[in-house]
Length: 126
Image (cartoon, rainbow, N blue to C red; front, side, top):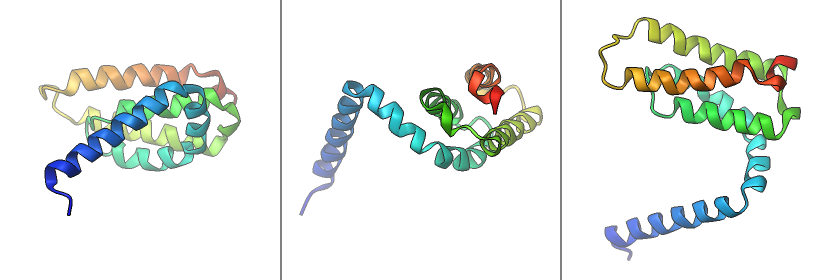
């Protein structure tokens, strides 16, 4: 039987191995990421509904990387789904107190990704 500490070590080791593999095959990772765009976009509204969720900007970044790597995945339906999630984030932010300690940093990160979305040539063509 594997103890708790050994189990944690196995998880840490596995994660490091995966990250190491991804770092050596970045192009292949980006190509595969495009296959998961629809899944990421389907999860985005759930993340968007939680004010300043820590993975909002990371998800937007992953979606952008996938779109930029494989522009053929972009469709009108995909753009509408992403736009809907961005709208949810903005509406929630309007009603969230600005004195939250994480608010301004997370807003900056997500706004940076928004800017990339709004200027992405593949999304503009869809």
